[in-house]
Amino acid sequence: MSSPGIVTFEEARHSVEQQAAQVSPGESEKVQLLAAVGRVLAEPIAADRDFPPFPRATRDGFAVRAEDLKQVPIRLELVGEIRAGYWPDPGTCNVGIGQTVSIMTGAPLPAGADAVVMVENTKRTGKSVEIQRSVKTGENFVPRGAEARQGQTLVDRGTRLDHAAIALAASVGASALPVFRKPRVTVLSTGDEVVETSATPGPAQIRNSNTYSLAAQIEQAGAEAVRLPIAPDDPAKLRSLIEEGLKHDLLLLTGGVSMGKYDLVEQVLTELKAELYFTGAKIQPGKPIVFGSCSAGIPARLPAANPQRAAGETQAPQRKYFFGLPGNPVSTMVTFKLFAQPMIAGLSGAKPAPLIFLKARLKSEIRTKTGLKRFLPAVLSGEFENAEVELAAWQGSGDIAALARANCFLVVPPDREQIAAGEWVSLLMP
Image (tube, rainbow, N blue to C red; front, side):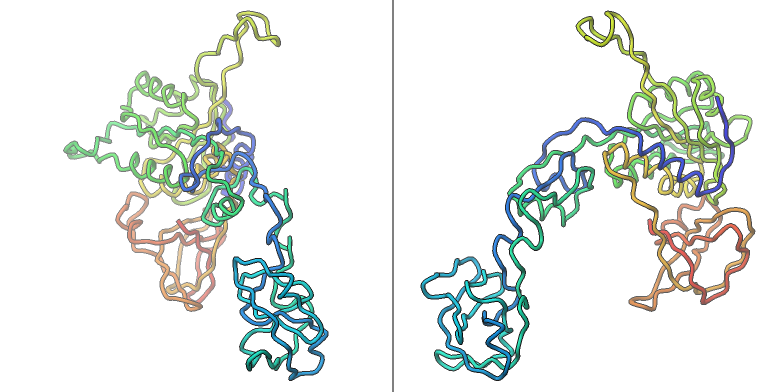
């Protein structure tokens, strides 16, 4: 088993993104429109007609010929009215020289008109309207097809469907959408010190919070979580559970990836001939993270009717990816966000989203050591342009309560040992 060792945060992230770009999503299924929210689109959504399908007024007012308004104020003859949802009557709503038509937002522009004057810039008296402000051709309406042409792709394959994408689907008459199957992500917690949540811990034991935090993060990332029993510090039992986990799309192990005598995960992965892409990242928390892949399952025997292969020939086993996440709860949650999430996106059929840092002013000075890129629990407060951030009081990467109080991570570059109050700092939102 190759072991490239500890890499920078950027190298680790790019390694995961590179592998995530190569994975294939599962099969697709068709689901009802609202059930598709948060799922990944398997086929593009195209416009079934021009959008808008007619020149659409964007203001309440009067449809006019801009040429008539070179000098204002001017009085025009009112020859009709058009409401949203009604097609203009060509016999009564054509706009000729010196004429205008009352029009509502969303209504089709009548023939002859090339602009709309807002109602607040007019004064109506009986069958005439005084226009008090000139307009240019094209003002206050959207031309036919300006948003999209018939057949044009509105939402690309691989898009995670949000409210805006659902609105577009509804606008083209799609009551159901093809989406990729949710990937199944296995969670395996390791170590004799870990007990189930329902158990009474011994003096040196902790309850299994990692399985639940990871399952929650997996579900929020658009995948299905599969929780396995806790793996004891026993190589044979650990190997059996790892092999079970590799039957699914992605395996997340938590604990057992450090350098201790009973950290057995790497030993078992070596036996499984795993390929490791890195065995640590220069970050805090989460430095001992492991990322790799290995062949999973028994090679599938192909049927004799397969024209490409001889009868009885076997396919190469499929390679499955895994992460060995640190056992400390905060480290587990941070490394999931930084590394496991883009792989889940790839397995879901989506392109991994770039990691975007926001900016805020630092409320209190920070002093730390150089050498690691740090993602520290922090509290963002204030509102509007006055947002500021400060570190949450925490006792290290086992302090779940501190993370629960935090609402972001403050990012400290590896070459900074002091950041003064008032400086702009980078934030990673959860």
